[in-house]
Length: 209
Image (cartoon, rainbow, N blue to C red):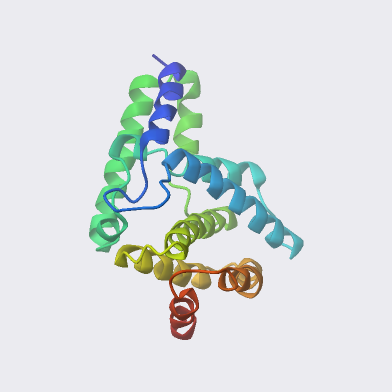
């Protein structure tokens, strides 16, 4: 089936709903998530570049747009489950990597195998592009949970998602990006009219950080 099979599998990403099993005012699918992550990364990579960093833009876009392709095979596992223990998270990642590897071996023509193995591998690493991917990925989790809290969805899972995403963003080792998010974007977030007290939830995290 070759590349055609890969193209067809992209439709599946549109049907995989993030944070399954919870009431949400807005549904988000994995395909849209990947696109948004690439847009967040574009902005914050630009901030890093303006502060003297060297960005491999090709690598950044490949990492961000492909980072959740493995969910074609395993779906989106609930955040509390996925992060309940480092061992479980590692096991899930191993299963996902193995299924991607099997798919490439079985479906992708030999001329493209090496390219696919490189582009679909885990993108979160010690490089600045890998850190930007993690920053952008957590930022989308932040915004998805914020949208629910803003409209009055007080499901504890979204409160936890909001605070955990914010906590991780503030700890990522990208000082220009973190500073811009904290000093500019977060202020705009707190100035929004929200049903739930976002300011209180936010300051709890900032105080702890």
